[in-house]
Length: 114
Length: 114
Image (tube, rainbow over all chains, first blue to last red; front, top):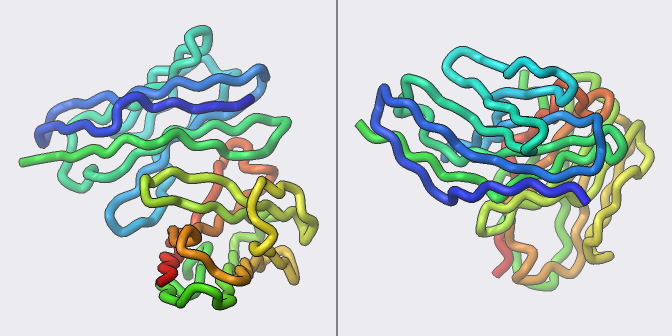
């Protein structure tokens, strides 16, 4: 079975600081993708960053980067220089080649305060 | 132009009614999906269609019926609405099952059953 676990229901960080959101996943497949989505109060689901499992190099997108530990099945998201606009729910998700089904974790609510 | 558009954005209806949510994507993607987000923000896939063919049909009540007239449209019809159907419903689309690019989501439809 394909599962995604986010153990931090809520996190908070001060503006300009760095925060790391945790995610672990479980799959029996070798070929898969991992994603982080952001859902601000507007409700829109926004793709933040993605990682192919076969790539060892960690993905980065501007202030967002991941720490992908394949053996540990861990996929954390680091947000540097946090901004007020980063306040949102963050969802970790996995997609396997066989199922073609994007499975989400339960989300982490991030609050960035001034 | 909105990539994945859903209508309506809000829907309030009484128990027992039948309602539909429409979704259209202009990205040229070959697969479309319906997700349900419950009050705890958990996102769960309901259906997916690939070029008008039903691919994924998760365990949802028979009262929910997706319809795809063409690969750019995927509608969701719900019969005999119940209080527990209250949720946000997201439409999404992808190319090649979302490998690499992930899914593109609409802005959601908040359904409230009273």
